[in-house]
Length: 241
Image 1 (cartoon, rainbow, N blue to C red):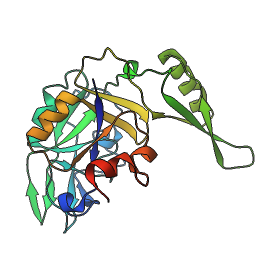
Image 2: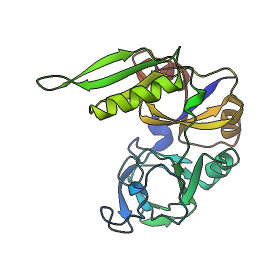
Image 3: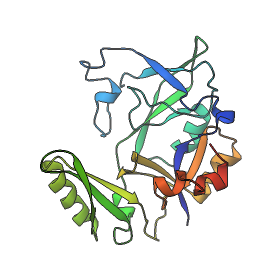
Image 4: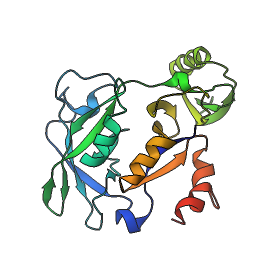
């Protein structure tokens, strides 16, 4: 089965302005309030967190997936009611959805949701085939990239803890998945971009058939350079940026 990560559309004809969100209205002290969603770790929440209201650019269009990269939306997806209900069917035990209305042309638009992940299916990764690197501190300053040989989830977790103690960061650059995955939706961490929300071919088609907008689907095995580079795979599917 083929799998894809959910990416924000880079086509301004679809999103109006790739930087769809210019700011946000925060409904609390974002530095002090422990219920602010960006202050909560990726664990299941048993209370109603405080979310922010994304403010859209003047040229931006309302899409089913909105590119919100400001405070209040770190490593989370901002989705319409339609897209949320599709993903919700496949999300049990993986993430939660909290209301997060957006502000568009000075009007508050209800029925937008922020996705809060709390479970990561790292065991779905074929570590033998995947390309993994560590960004580590150099003596005398700066950092350097080191390719790692990791063969199992246990190896990966041990390396993650080892380099974390040294101030390093581990990234899975090319993600290869096991062949026996039955889930249609799952979430990975420590990948390019920090977190990837992954869908199966079946779920990809369901989202496309529902005419959900603002989304591009990147084959999960491709690195960001292979996807976005000159003459890369994205250009072949979605056209030039």
